[in-house]
Length: 395
Image (cartoon, rainbow, N blue to C red; front, side):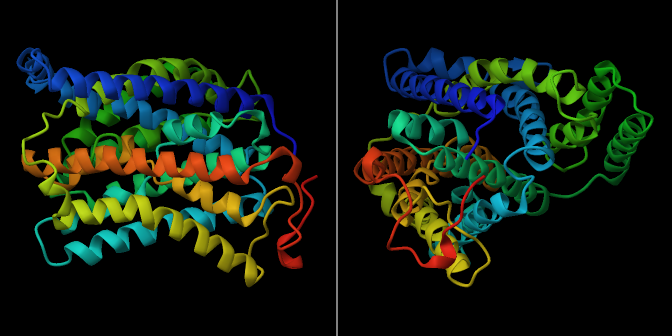
């Protein structure tokens, strides 16, 4: 399977970003539970223009993160790993299972309770953390496995965006929503008129974000909409979309996401935090991420292959898919983000963050050790135990 330079750059950048996120998470937890806790927590609650620092990060800077997610989704669909139906079907089906089964686990534990709204929390995969964990295995990882995990996480991001837009929207202020969509329509018109200058798109995106913020629909959706309004062209290095994506990648990977990690993992562990791990919400998040993710990804992938809908790349085994499914259980960024939308009580939010961190850590460790056993240079190739319908050549 051929791997483009853009994909290689993306993979290595996400790997580095994941390591930075790990460091920020550990640092934030240590500071929040140290003698500097009061000052550290106070900083994130400082008011600026009517909103706290953490609020500006979650609703403002994260909109830029979603802009990048939208640009990456656009590239994958047009010329990337999702542009070919043959390559796209397996990660699409796997991602579907990786969203539905974890949500089902959480719903099973929390049906009819105040924490039922948290069903979306275990649905997402943190692409930076997942790729960082996979990268620790070195060059023996098949390229098709890197692409499978990347595509899976990208599709997960799209699923999370849809979940936010559909299920985590409160009362709608229709005038503001109409204003936001009108701006979006104007941006699409600029695209049709072949306007390539980035400035009007960025200004329009900022205006759309403002109206979306006051519409009742989460403002970060404006980032995704802006991305799909920006001209893609042929996707080469001179295209408007590519220029913006290349510009945003490092500031977001090494600026926005670390800030998000610092602000949202500043959790003071209560004395009884261990007891909260057996509450319904905690069990739902844990089983969703640690069990539901690998189970959903593996079963949906295998099932779709057996009935002939998808095919497994010739250099992969089903054990590779199972191990990667555990890496899909690293929720972190999107899981924490959805937590804020699902709950409005600080105690439940903090409890959810703790479980997300524990679940993501255990899922990542399990995925790494399983793949470390199953991914071996001398065994990478066609698996003789697969059914003939699951084998194909990746030209």
